[in-house]
View (tube, rainbow, N blue to C red):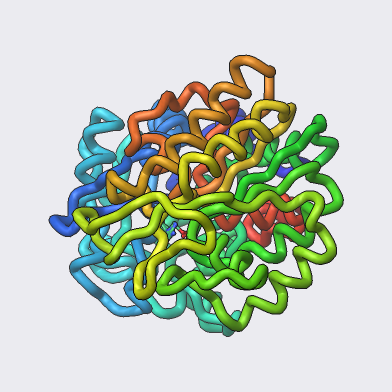
Length: 405
Ligand code: AMP
């Protein structure tokens, strides 16, 4: 990366300067509004701590969920402010708005080493607007909070694939630097994207096929095997003629999946058995079935044990592994075995075969922690799902290229 980094900013000196930081605090919440996995908060700490120690007046911008441009208490960053205060070991104030009076007053009142969190930037529709002028106007207002001599640090790796106001337009308006997290993520993913040691095994899961077809296409040339599980495998199974009953299915993608199977069939590895459940619920009746054995009206929330074994055999031979997307509905205990088994196989390949293993994505990373697996069993757990996928696909990340000037 030829971009300026946080170290460059620290060398220039931040004492008494307002520094706007874009972090990724899009953490999973349960129905009670409690954070179920603080991984992204933990990952933001090195950058924030360095700025606090340097005496900066830190203003953090972040989003949570999809409030669609409207103020919605459900998506308030209040639980994040509390968790961040605890993790940083100092009080982090939450502004009552994003660029309003309260944010201004609090930003003006900051002293050296203070941290202020703005409310969810997506409470303002201009944050994600496609119209550059609208985004620019919002970015101007964010930049105003940083007064004279301000700086911007981009540290929300999970959002650098988006040309949004707090990620992209702010970076154009202030001296801009890559934070420690963004710097680390890019350098690790570069290792996977450029010259991965083979055998290179890519494991894809999660719910949406359409999001990941581009990755299959882009990685088919580099990867030796592409394992497909999770909600996205049923569209491939349907393309092979199986009746997937009420399992997740993207019908409009069946033809594309058939085409991918024709072209890359020797690389694509699909499940050989499934778990079938009568209903989408943790206490539903369920059983292991063959691919053609999902009872009428049932659905499949997980891959079966033989699939795990087959996938594990492939993973065991790998020298590079990239995993994005859970193998099943891991949030429900009876359907977490596929994800757990595959994750354990990756941990084993890392330990026993010296495989370089990267977990990409909010859900996969969360599943590792939620299922109680050893985080340090992987070479790297990325905080960005979409961003890591787009990087591996070779797409430009606007939030990173904007720093390159
Ligand atoms: P994504 O956001 O595309 O990575 O998808 C993650 C979500 O996919 C998780 O919340 C899983 O519960 C869900 N998922 C994985 N496998 C299945 C499945 N077989 N049926 C329904 N949802 C699934």
